[in-house]
Length: 379
Image 1: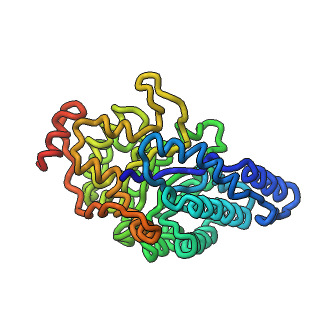
Image 2: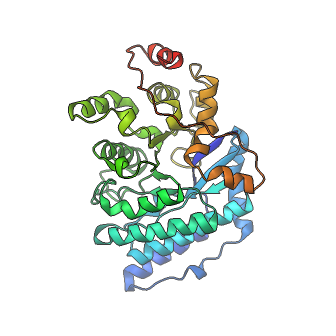
Image 3: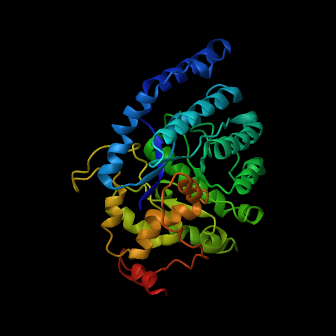
């Protein structure tokens, strides 16, 4: 079974974007509200969008299931006020729930949160906890997207480890659901969204976690850092050295019990680096399809975001590790997922058992040689 833990409804019917444009314009011009009831999208429109988009590619690539969320870039938390973000989150999450209802064997929901920047951050975090509970308990969702920069490109919020976020973390722990740490759009012209803000957000969030004792306060909190962790795997030695210099516990003890990475890495060497550096039990299969990159790689003949093909091309990856990355880890990290699938009559493999991450091999040979050999031998 292949479970893609990172999918967005980027092909939503045009009416959704038109409603959002009217919502933003009405508030900016007069403070007026546009009712969610004014949004009209038929089941046929949703079906056409999914069947000609995500589902078509899932079938071509052999992906069985996607954890599906609203378009991350369009969360755009800086627009309007708290009520603006709350209404937009409700509309977006309810649409995801409809997708899951129409294609119950293909999609499981992950929700957007009604975050807001500035002085509204604290109260918006409390609203986010309420919306998360609604989506999990009423809509059957299994996780959420957490934006570490609701100012959308200006990084004006405190780190994710600040206690302002604790009401949300308390709810996540209570419900036993993870968050994918995912920035939204960048409105800063100096920081491009897809290749700068997204990857910089991943890297920044990981460093915030390295500097904190968040997981002492929330030992069972689970966070997924997407896009292969941004720069993290490439600079693993820098993080290890920082932790050592600061007298902090090693990464395996301080972070890897709670933090996971997805496989949204779009070339073979990058994917090899990810699996060589990060323990297999901390990696979840994902493609971000249909999202950041949509074209065909002329070097492989496959689409850049066909990450399943890239994973299968790694000869150094053991079969148990491959199965864990493709499905078993997602079923463990998104711990509500097995019950959701069972309720839909879907048979899933057993979740990969959790264990304390062992130290990451530090061999100096090229990817796939010394480091991989040490990892596979258990040394």
